[in-house]
Amino acid sequence: MSASKTRPIRWGMVGGGRGSQIGYIHRSAALRDSTFELTAGAFDIDPERGRAFGVELGLDEARSYPDYVAMFAAEAERPDGIEAVSIATPNNTHFAICTAALEHGLHVICEKPLCFTVSEAEELKALSQARGKIVGVTYGYAGHQMIEQARAMVKNGDLGEIRIVNLQFAHGFHSAPVEEQNPSTRWRVDPRFAGPSYVLGDVGTHPLYISEVILPHLKIKRLMCTRQSFVKSRAPLEDNAVTLMEYDNGAIATVWSSAVNAGSMHGQKVRIVGEKASIEWWDERPNQLSYEIQGEPVRVLERGMDYLYPEARIDDRIGGGHPEGLFEAWANLYRRFDLAISGNSRLAPAGVRNLVFPDIDAGLEGVRWVENCVRSADAGGIWVDYK
Ligand code: NAD
View 1 (cartoon, protein in one colour):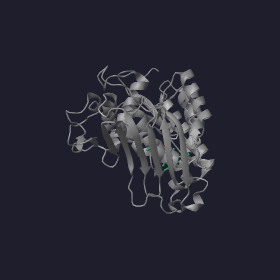
View 2 (spheres, rainbow, N blue to C red; view 1 turned 90 degrees about the horizontal axis):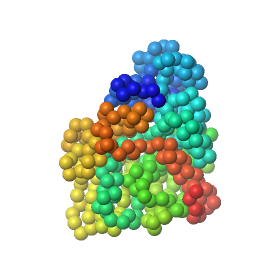
View 3 (cartoon, rainbow, N blue to C red; view 1 turned 180 degrees about the vertical axis):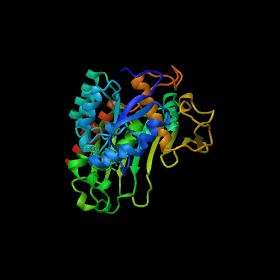
View 4 (cartoon, helix red, strand yellow; view 1 turned 120 degrees about the vertical axis):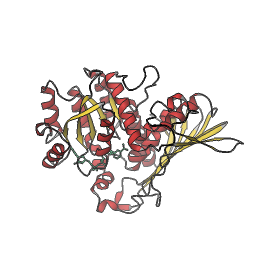
């Protein structure tokens, strides 16, 4: 792309309009480090509401579009048109909007799940390669610094051979049929908008991606999954699922995905058990990583400290002791998207950063995992070879 090393990438948004759950954090993260500049948008399914919202955000009225089709067409005609777009709309629209964006020569940052099927994801991958554009996927929790520490600890052998992986994202917010009142939840439990799953795709793919970052050498060999709709009106979509997985090195994993874990705030946890020691990360206390060596007292490693591996300190913005949160984690991801798009190293010393970011392959893997889980669950919870 032509993005220069000295100016922000011209960036647009589809979705993420007023009152949406995830729009604000996209803007906050993208704009935090002056790597992206919001220059256009089609923010809302309601054209007038979307237009007004864009103007309120400071956009030129002509560039606050009624829909993404008009935006991509008009921006492609401008010498100063957008170079990248983020897609923050319900799941059923991702494939069509991603395809259109890539066809208009844009880099894409897309919400998860990337699309509904592996074959759609493979199509997007081929298109992004043909056009030489990146597709980033906002597995935002992966931007927390202690995930980099965990990855480095595994790489450096601090845990020894990995044996057991325990993953969960199990919140309690949908223990009752809140979708009757809440439109943001309503589409999530309707397969026409959500796709083949609810919690597997909506929450389970987050710790799954974190496990891929920390354990890049582990490949899933087979899995079995059971899924339930405890709130009956959600069937056929599940509000709870348990997945058991075997990796090709003999390690095993469980993944608990749930929206009915009553009383739990978020409940996203990643525990990795090696032959010598274990580590555990919990997204409600993201600045800490528990390091448990067999036979020794538990250590709690803290973000921003000198004793961490260098990879875990690259994104430190303020020094240890100061709590950072989800907004910083997302900003770290957007900084990596910028690096991937422009090769821009102005914000990270060249050669220091091992550029790991949720790319098209991460998006594809999330879709593949959901597809395999659903295949197993709908066949009665049987082992299926991972494909
Ligand atoms: P939401 O229902 O709260 O908001 C959706 C927004 O998209 C609204 O502003 C709506 O008007 C707009 N919209 C819908 N169709 C559109 C279209 N065709 N063109 C333009 N705008 C359109 O949904 P949400 O909770 O913000 O979720 C949006 C996406 O983000 C989903 O794919 C969801 O899975 C994902 N999400 C990801 C995370 C994360 O941690 N990465 C968290 C929450 C949601």
